[in-house]
Image (cartoon, rainbow, N blue to C red; front, side, top):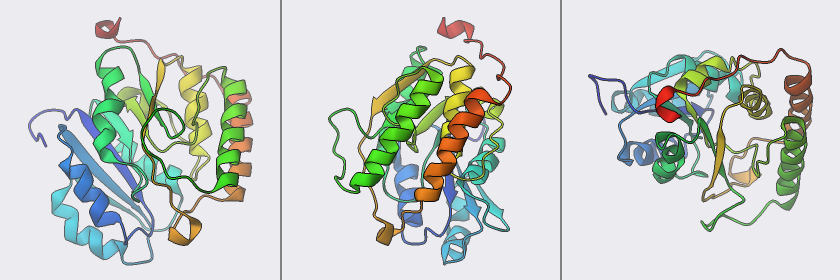
Length: 246
């Protein structure tokens, strides 16, 4: 990790009660051979997460603590505010997503053809766990409705893996404190006319008995956010493509 120059990648890891997987996901993220900073944001955990964070503080760039639980969107917002890398990626603290896929995810931006990259769990040849049928149906429906509102053809709007040029991430001004941030972000990068790419990723989904947190109320909130951020908020300033990417 470079300390003398701007890192290539800021990795934002929002955390809430992830004592079972936290050390392992940090280990895997550290092992990825990319010039990076790792920013951990603990969103008011009530299990043993706090003790683990204190133990590993010296191995990552920043550890930030929320005094109370506010939601994933709030943790991501805090991470973005503290990011200094040229690019930025969101990494969940569980083991559903594999940090070894960072190089592939950032490559379209490095190639100058993309401004934002989504990692899709539903395309490509990489392995993914097969389960939670109704969760998949709900995800597909929300992605469809988001696509209809934005006029872009994503296959996985709700994916954790979203990569941005950091200047775009800092302009998002995320308002949603919970999982509603996913359709909010999608609406905003679309309305900013960012060049959005999608890459197939592997996926090891968790069940609710394994700690999965998103539920039915989040689906209803996502539907509300699709409508709100596509039709009832001001259009964000258009992102101007950097000269070196034209």
